[in-house]
Image (cartoon, rainbow, N blue to C red):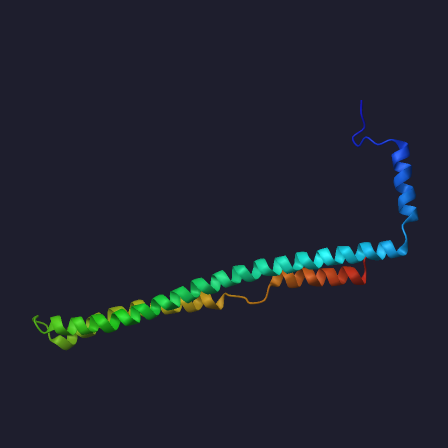
Length: 144
């Protein structure tokens, strides 16, 4: 039967000797490399969070653009409603007012929805800030 991690005693003794012979300079170099890697990982996390927030901002901006388009349509349809209302039995002013109110409601709903989504955009990468705080805490007390 074999051991779960097959290593002979000579190999273990060799690794123990290498650890004992490691200089303080090498240890500091290793720490420096680890900190550099940690920093790069934090930057990647921040990039991912910023991309996510930019996507949310883009969607909210799209809704606000749709609200502006609805406003444009309201102006165009008001003009058409006024022209066609003259031929109908209903008074032209009342027909134009009904169409205007409908488009105003649609525009208001789109605007409110887009504004609500835009308020949920958080420009600060919260997870990155939290992990940076954890890293700073660890650096202050690496053993505990």
